[in-house]
Length: 282
Image 1 (tube, rainbow, N blue to C red):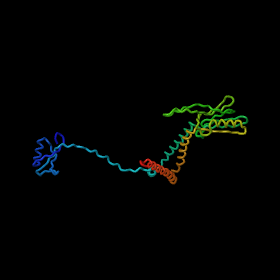
Image 2 (tube, rainbow, N blue to C red):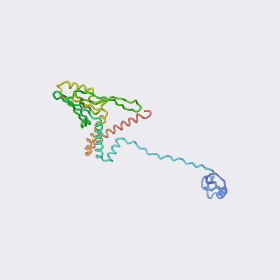
Image 3 (spheres, rainbow, N blue to C red):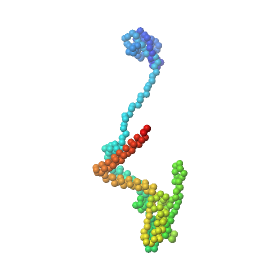
Image 4 (cartoon, rainbow, N blue to C red):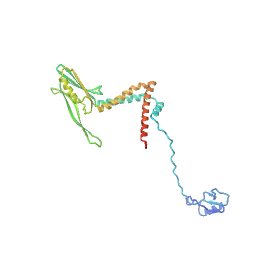
């Protein structure tokens, strides 16, 4: 080592001591001396000292190879979860209740509008009721001596990303008598409704009004988009409550898991098919 730098070179001397003296005279600290054959020499006369400059390079160590782990299928995950986890019945009750409450909330925001008219002697009394999911009564109005079925309309604008704003027409039902009294639904419906449209209701009301032989007429309508989401949430909640008693029975649990494994196996088949179709050269 010279000036703090490790060097290596060859020098010829008659003995080891002579080689050491020559190197020390040049202010070189000797770390090792080897003969020309590459062995470390202590007793042999001829010795070669290494003191030439040598570049020290540190090669990066490759990262350890991770063991190959095969992807776990959906069926295997389901079986492992069944073997290691216990049924969470209380959690299931909370989730099912949340689904039902969500369905009721959406049904309250967009209730089913039901119009019913009854004939009594020479007059017609009509009722407009709004029902959450068609079951729970939210609002109800009644008008005696109903003579006219009409509608109120308004325009609504829906903003869309990267598209022009969409303007569509909304309407609601208005029933009135000949004395200036009227009742109307609080819910505005658009063109996409389940049940009867406003125009269809108006035509059927006129037929009922002028046909004394018919004693009762009724119709209903609801916006299909919120009703679809409310129906999905409510259906999931009822399904969970229906399946909950099966968790207390071994046979019932086996039936539920058998159905779940069938769906999981189908999902695995579709995943493998998509993987093969996306493989290069397929």
